[in-house]
Length: 479
Ligand SMILES: NC(=O)c1ccc[n+]([C@@H]2O[C@H](COP(=O)([O-])OP(=O)(O)OC[C@H]3O[C@@H](n4cnc5c(N)ncnc54)[C@H](O)[C@@H]3O)[C@@H](O)[C@H]2O)c1
Ligand SMILES: O=C[C@H](O)CS(=O)(=O)O
Image 1 (cartoon, helix red, strand yellow):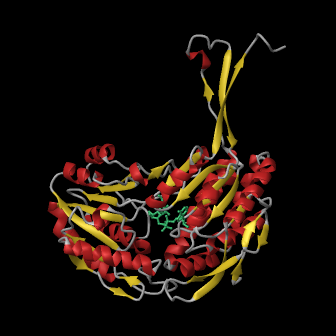
Image 2 (image 1 turned 180 degrees about the vertical axis):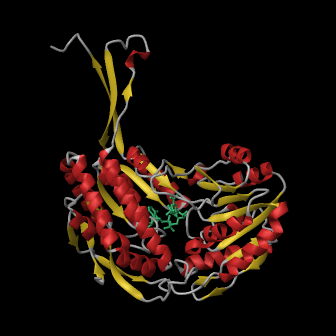
Image 3 (image 1 turned 60 degrees about the horizontal axis):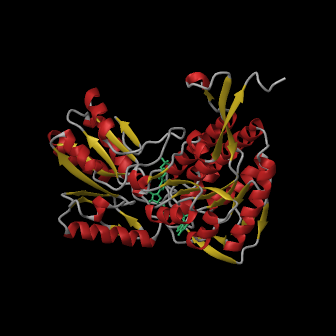
C-alpha cells in the first residue's frame, strides 16, 4: 500500500499543502502520511462534484447499479486487505474488521438493488372533489452534491451508507473521512475507478472537521449534508448547514432490558459482546443493562465471568477481543469518567485497569444516575448494570436519556415485548436481542439527540433526493 496519500478530486490525485502522519493506535507506529485538505480544496472538490452532477444525474439507474455491484465485488475480492486496513488504522480486532467488510459488501449490494427500484407513488386524485379526470404521481430526482462527514469506528461500512445511496440516487459526493481512519476511504478511489464510476462523482478529502466544516456544509452547491458522529459535532453542523437537507446519525447510551423469565443461557454471550465489541466504540454499544431482581445476581456473576475471559491483545491476532481505544485522548477521558463514577458511589466489579492504550473491559454496579457513565455516551469498554423490580421501572430508566438510537429487551412474554416496544423512546427496538444489532437495509436512526433522518440505503436515498408531484388532467388539453 502507498505511504503518501494525496487528495482525490475530480478523478485525480492532487497534492495537498500539508501532510500529517497517521499512527497505528495499538503500536503507535506511523502507517502513512495523509494529505490535509484546506477550505480551497473542499471548494474545488465541491465545484468538480457540481459539474460532474450535471452529467451524472442522467446516468441510467441500471448503469449506476452495475457500478455499485462491481464495487461490492471488488471489495469482496480484496476483503482481507480491506479488513487489515481497518485493523491497522482503527485498532479493530481482525475478526470484527472482517465482519465489517462483509457487511460493507452487502451495503453496496443493497445500494445496487435500490438504484433500480427508486419508485414513486400513484396518488388517487378522485379521492377529493375536483380530482376527477386527473392522475397524480410522484417521482424522485437526484438532489445534487452531497457532502458526507464520517466517524472513525466503521470506516468502510458507515462510508458505504453514504456513498452507496448517493450514487444509487444519481448524486455526486464529497467525502471527508475521520482523521483517525482515512485509509479505508482513500482506498475507495481506486475501487470505484475500477468499478467504472465516472471521474468527479466521488471526491475524497481527508482533513480536519473544524477546518473544512463551513465549506462542506455551507457551500451553495451543496444540497445535502450527511453526517455520522458525535452529538456535539452534529449540533455544530446543524447550525452551519442552514436551509438544506440534513441527515445526522449521532451517539447513544443504549439500554438493554433483561426481563423476568429470560433465559440467561441465551443472554450472557450476546450481552457481553454487545457491551465490549470494538471496545464499546459502537454507537449502539450496550451501556446500561437493566436486569430483573429475580435474575440479577446470577446474571451479574455470569456476565463478569465471561467478561474476564475476553482476550486482550493485538488487533491482528485472531483470538483478540479487546484492543487499544482509538486515541490517548479518548483513554484519558474514559479514565476520568471512571474515577468520577467511583467517587459518586459506583463499584468496579471487574476491569478498570489500563495497560498501554488498552482499557480492560469494565463492569460497574451501583452507578449514580448523575454520573457521566450513565448520562453521557461512554463510547469505551465500560458497562453499567442495574437491578429492577417492575418492567415500567426499567422502561422509565431506559428512557431517562437525551439519546434514543436502539434499545433491546429479552423477554419470554409476547405481551411484555410489545408493551416495551411501544414505550421505549428509541429509533429501533430490538426484541430478544441486543440493541447492538443492525442489518444494513433496515431503517436506522435516532430519536431525541441521537439524530435527524434515517439511513439504511432506501431511507438514506429518500434524504438525498427531491420528490416531485405530477398531476395530469385528462381530456381537455390532450389531442
Ligand atoms: N448513529 C450512528 O449511526 C453512529 C455511527 C457511528 C458513530 N456514531 C457516533 O460517532 C461518535 C464517534 O465517532 P467520532 O469520534 O469519529 O465522532 P466525531 O464527531 O468526533 O467526528 C466525526 C466526524 O466529524 C468530523 N468533525 C469533527 N469536528 C467537526 C466540526 N467542527 N465540523 C465538522 N466536522 C467535524 C471529524 O473529523 C469526523 O470526520 C460517537 O458519538 C458515536 O456514537 C454514530
Ligand atoms: O457505530 C455505530 C454503527 O452504526 C454501528 S453499525 O455498524 O451500523 O452496526
